Length: 374
Image 1 (cartoon, rainbow, N blue to C red):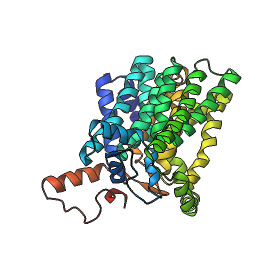
Image 2 (cartoon, rainbow, N blue to C red):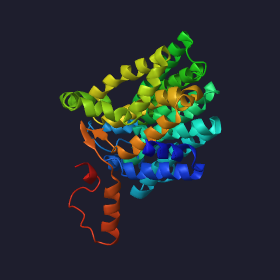
Image 3 (cartoon, rainbow, N blue to C red):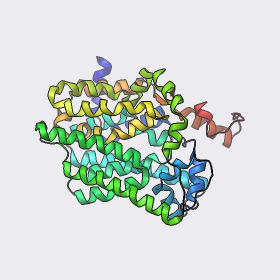
Image 4 (cartoon, rainbow, N blue to C red):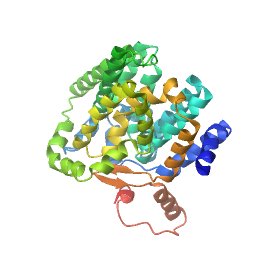
């Protein structure tokens, strides 16, 4: 218990600056920073987002993540470094906005607990582990939540989300809309996220997709969607899930599953959340990057029912918060791709820098983008 007591002091007694520095430093070391393996294809598209840059229909689903390549094209960030730095900037903006919202909208104690829970979730760092489209996707999801008092603004951010990643935005907000409507019907939580803002954002995502179809039509682009990739890889996806079910499910929340157990103590009041969460878990059978997709689509739900709810955060005791911090620090980063657990890319980043800058480390003769995931 001495270690848990010490961890609790870190959460509640350290100066805010020191507490946040520890959390962010631990996030960096536990996860690391690397680019998404298919970043080269996305960069090629960013150089002209109104032309299909490759003929392979199994790659053309990448073009439906349109908004961030368009932004890169619009500001001229289409070099390898410029594109990667832009998307790393989206990830940093996501983390910074979440931190600001915590301490702006919540009391100090609850804000610190929210930061610990956030850090324990794969959603908090997946945009660093694979620098790419996810930074903007998560940032837009967060701006939707920040617009809870202005439904029209949530709708505008929803349109942007539909242009960025329709499938993830639609599933994530559909799950959230179900949960908040169910919670409102049961009148279980007076702090439930306003359903009107969720509904406006959900409709905005659909409008964003319609707008993207119109953009492709106007540009004369014939784009194969994700259904082509899914049909081709159906058998592989089933093997990945059913042969690695336990690690796949664990990776969705990671140490955040301990917070899920704590939330279950609310009894019937937790029912909307868990029905929504377990209702979306079967999606794991239909995606290849299991942790990434489920971490993102469950983020709006977790953000709404855990991370912004004062009553939920207030119920977390000092020892529970310290225990979660300690567990998160000692449990290795597990991120499942292709049914296989991956690990922190931080050591690879250090080795890459040493190899490039000094030559003391001999980099392997492989595609360096895929090196950490082999």
